Length: 100
Image (cartoon, rainbow, N blue to C red):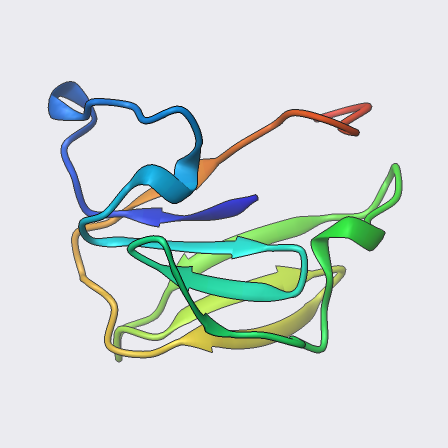
């Protein structure tokens, strides 16, 4: 699960899981996009569940406020009109074997 959140990390009350963030949060889970806990898009051309050791992932917001997810240099705009003062949110649990 990766995404962005607009909250100051010093002031965040962390929910049980990232879907519990209900304000200014965009997440990509498997092949779906969630905004403030609600699914807004599904069946992305990339899927986080299919990542293997050695593959790369990136997330960024461009100058037009588009949220990009990049997996092995495949760049997909997953959301538009996201906030400009964001922080990356990465949740590592379950089947994660290695992070570099």
